[in-house]
Length: 348
Ligand SMILES: [Zn+2]
Figure 1 (spheres, rainbow, N blue to C red):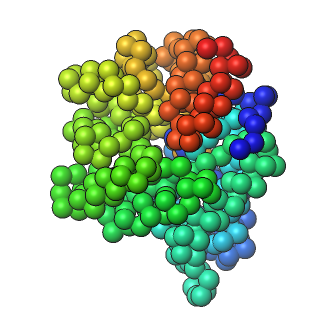
Figure 2: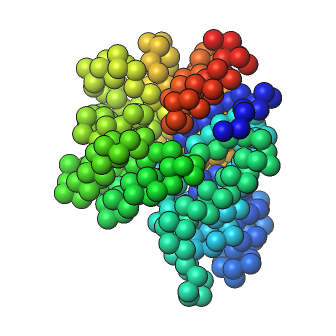
């Protein structure tokens, strides 16, 4: 494994590949493929693929419904967005990030041309290739997580297989994303089984839980699905016993500040946030941007946001960055190198 770049120190764990696509790239790809978008300049398109004001999580899904069909099924575009993400992250001083996505959502070609649709495995190979080239060119380390989707239990088994198949090619873990549906319903059983298989096979696991859903989803993620990290997790605070238990166990929460207000996961008062309690209690959490292009944010802006609104200081932000390094899904020896790199640059 290459050495970490001594000029970069930030670590980002919760970053959706398809939520990080440059608007310029969307326009160019749509033009090349002859696909229509709701606007044909960057400025006009941004409002259709982003959210600037707190709203509802469905507004976020609307943005994805506009942008994913542009990329889906296009080999060059899939590789390109992974490559460009490395450049965007490197420019912010990010030394290591994990990008997550669901390969199945990028397989269908909607242009009407047939015969060239990538399989889910081929999508993973394209993303791996883009991340590897980008890592090299921008001196950054990038890994990926594959997302099972709550609404699509039929994909979950294959997702675990793909995680295993590409574990030496940059895929370091499994995520569960999507809406809340399936909770305690039969549709959820394949997800539970997939995460149990993942644990058995040594595939790392994070799960979106306690974002718009309640603490029972966090509990399920941890107890039945063996999550090692929780995406968001804010509503764990609605169950004090569960929170105390997870805090004691050192469960890592991937907090995404701007996203949490935009999707309505938390109350729209920028001075209040469950993560302020996490900070007070010394709970294990880190900062991420979630979908930087959709929420018009970046890891840099997230740090500014929590300083201005939550009163977080530089020492705390350094601790959160170190928390992220310690919670990453790299193999142990590589993780230890990342942790000491971060400690060297910002102190223990
Ligand atoms: Zn997310």
